[in-house]
Image (cartoon, rainbow, N blue to C red; front, side, top):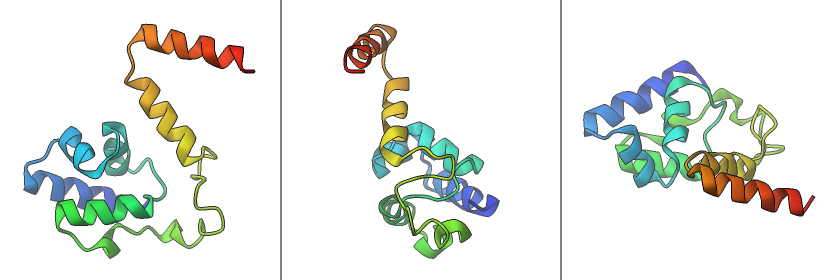
Amino acid sequence: MEKNIGSIIKQARLQKGYTQEALAQLVGVQKSAVAKWENGRVSEIKRSNIGSLSEVLGIDPVLLVSDSDAMNKENPTVQDDGISEEMQELIDRIKSLPEDKIQLLLQVAKSIE
């Protein structure tokens, strides 16, 4: 992801008066996803999220498409760090759980290995 994409998202978010959490809710992602976009820690934004971001923030979706988009078309569900979108979503959801729920999930995971 180019640095300026994160800046575009952040600037548009602030102009609309949204917090990262509010934008995340409107787009349908975790707050951590918005933070990653704004900080340039994501190589590409999912197409569905580009559409939602564009609509919510009132910006041209072309501004949100990274140069690496063409390189990742062969395997669009795997991010540059090798983690699938589903795995990243699972990680993000787990991070928001209380400790007792995390321990429960860990027990379940161990039982199905």
